[in-house]
Length: 430
Image (tube, rainbow, N blue to C red; front, side):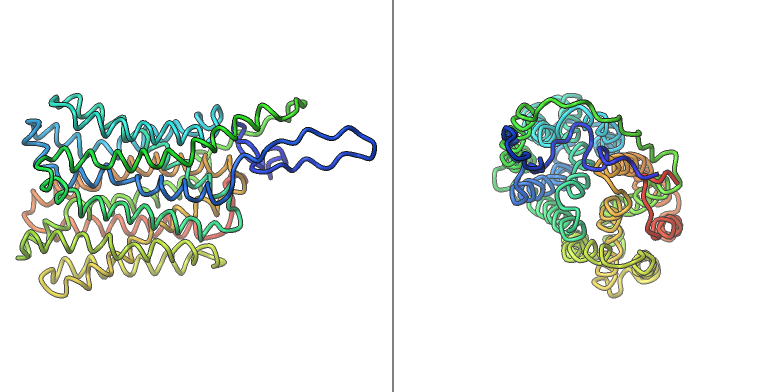
């Protein structure tokens, strides 16, 4: 059943984006005008700045992990915890975001999230204690976890007729931030003579991302105070994606594609090094996957928003990834650039699933519920990727078994993709 009109506009904590109070009747006292909460351009700028931050804290640490281990004396177990911490944080804290959205305006949440990200990144480079480094990293990742869930909801709330275009724009910003952080963390550290500079510089980017959301949060608060007191609307029925087949299919697709993505980020460079490439060349090939993914991230959501069914995209992405995996298994020393390009296109499953979150919900409340469930559950699945690839690599001494595992994950991803390809909505509860 379609939710009532009071539920279709926004979650309980959200504030209308514009004054839609009808004009007063003749000879009536003029209604008190509620100031608009947001401007579309400012919201879009704020979203793009947030997206630039969503992976920089993770990939910069990955690039400098050896230096951090040496500098802090991290044990192997502690280093393993640090590399697994992003998926743990994204899964656990992402699941709490719908609860937060019901109590606070999204703009206020994003101010808090970006502040947590900035403060966490500063504090972790000021400590010489490994446990404190882990705790402050968790603080930074908490901000990313909340922002991960909020962005699809904001697209639905502020740009309902441009879902594909806006999702593509912020996904491209996310991919760009990922690439820049991974490529420049080491040079920045070398330039300043310390790994702390290579990690800490990204706190400045998070601080900049706070700026657009401060006036938006203030406007939301002012609009809520100015709004006339009215009878409370009927309560919205709670949307529970975990009780629907669509919700689980979205979670499995998100998890399977993230599993492959994190496995590629963690192990592709090692695969190329084992194939005889120099470490520098192997690193550049890995960076190529992310860099080539930038235009894919922009185009994929637009295609998804225009097609009547997502099946052609789901199957095409599967084909690109499958050919890339087979090429890496059978001829890694061959046309490496071809395998990298095919992998980059195949990783278009990430912007596709982000777009689909908005396409499979009618309301902002449905979008945030589906986003939280798909991402939090999906990141639990994703955490297994680098771990199992590493176990299989150590056990077999080669890449056939790990790539076989990734092909199996791709098959699961494709099956879930066929379920979510058909247009329907999470509010329908199926």
